[in-house]
Length: 438
Image (cartoon, rainbow, N blue to C red; front, side, top):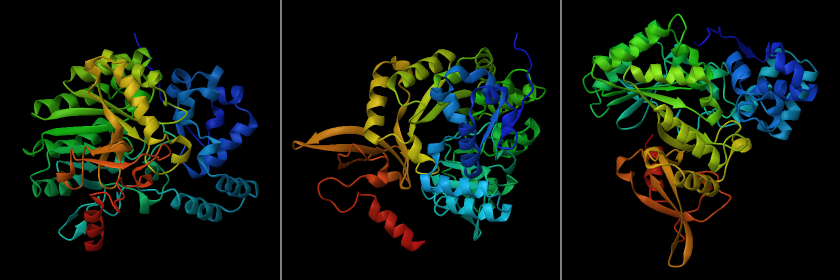
């Protein structure tokens, strides 16, 4: 039987209360946490600290790297600036100015999220909504814009730093439903954050139920890290049965519920409470699909991905995406070059059974769309890098293969040069024209 455990969260204000911090972390490491955590959000909970981190080897532990700020996450000059400001104990207002300037240089909303993804209805932008691909809208309910713990690599970090100008959030669902009905091509709603599963069941139900009355909606997706960071949510909390009943009600309405679980390392799948949580979710009729970026220091080995996909299938999950870490926040610290990511994907993919080969990757969620790295290829004796669209702002781009000059150092689409001496990739002219029109 799984024992009931109450959640306790730790942030920059109280993380020194964690017994393992007192025992294992030097003053120098605690300084790193304080300086970096002043710029990028830091939050962890007792489940992650007690159940997932190997504190005897914390320096190399992937879950420690995943949740505790690291010195290398800031550029050296920015680290020195923040450290000096903290040592001089400047006013909160002055510190905030320094920190916000650094944050503004970390590309807080990449891939056109703020400028090109927010839809317009009746002449007004729909705050808290993104509509990049025809069939799917992203909905950011305001009550779900936090997480049980924050990932150090998270590309949604602007949701957590208290700056409304760079945050997506929406209080109500009705206007979103109206927008959906005006766009009959929309079939999927992805409820995201932050983490929607930090909400109580009644609040989450209030956001979801209006979509259940819309015939054109076929799939409700929930993007969440809760399965890894707080599986008790689905096992023995006071709200557990109400959450599972909501999942069952989505299925009863005739919609498919896809629980989009963010799982970054096999260690997250190792606890008995995780196994039981997965069983309880699957018993409602929901699917669990898994996704993660590939990141240096955390999961940049083929063995890690092989083990992770194998364990996910064993538990009844569906491996879905290997992403490339987005070009925001601490990307330089976590980034893996595209060619190396492809090699890791290839070697892991070859070593799992066919049932695990539902996974796609490595994928860049870039401004023009989701771009898959297909790997090196030779054309007329010249080595090139092949890529293809899995999703696109223009649906006509989907499944189109294109080629870039082979570059082992490139880490993102913008780092690549078009092959065959072309000035632009085939999709770039349309993107440039779109920017001019808007």
